[in-house]
Image 1 (cartoon, rainbow over the protein chains, first blue to last red):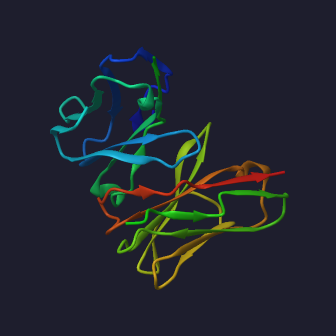
Image 2: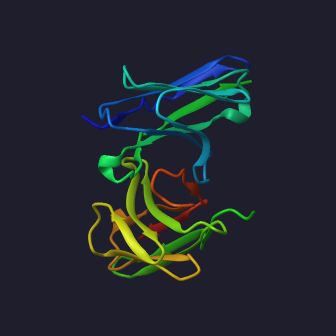
Length: 112
Length: 113
């Protein structure tokens, strides 16, 4: 079993829909949680960065961390075709010297 | 601020050859990490350098090596290339490395024939 599980998709939704992307993890020691967006032929771009549990909002994006369920989510409101990309979750803990452990990435397609 | 710059963007090499990839981090960032990304394996950590010292290393063979210079620029070298080394090689920089978010370049696409 991988430390971080993420459904590779693809996830296809109509423009304007609310998108929910999720990762589950097994290591309860994870402290830092990140979401990255990667367009084709580009490097991953940091979207959200949270420490410990709770919610964080930035524009149309909301990141949630539920440490009791070992589950993190990224919500995208009013989705746009330009949001079509692969979304990767990553997390780190002190027992791995804070090296990021990555999900496989979810391919998201927003249909106009 | 300029982002992370990787050169070259594309490379085609033959099996058995060696290759050197270059990375210039964001100004002020002292940590540089290297990753290999393939469709089957996703993002795999190669190594991290901080202040010219390798601080962490992933599970790659010794053919993969790196170094960091005093200006934080970093190079990665792969010797005796194999077909399976074909991948997107990504460099990422961060302020301190430990717990800090990574900022990626657009990678070097290496094709081994």
